[in-house]
Each structure stands twice: as C-alpha cells, then as structure tokens.
Length: 57
Image 1 (cartoon, rainbow, N blue to C red):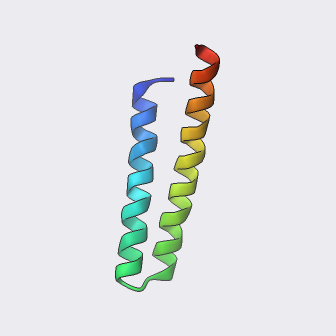
Image 2 (spheres, rainbow, N blue to C red):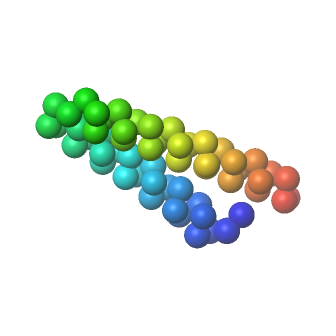
C-alpha cells in the first residue's frame, strides 16, 4: 500500500471532520451528515489499507 493512498485517506477523514463541524456550527444537518458519511468511507478505506499491509508483511 502506497503512502500516497494512506495520506489521501487520512485527508478524506480530516475533511469529513471539518465538514461535520461546519454543519454543526451552522446548524446544517445535511452537511453534518455528509461529513459523517465521508468519515465512514475514509475509515473503511483505512481499514482496507491496514488489511493489505498485514498480508504484505
């Protein structure tokens, strides 16, 4: 697994946190939900990264 993919997935997670925070701050439930969804997607990708790393070693 490339470091670039890991960094990309971590950035997606961070963006999801930001989006969720902005949604909460502006009382925008849709934006908050999108942020949580983005975080969940990034978490799944990161779990896949970890599984691939485990099989490579």
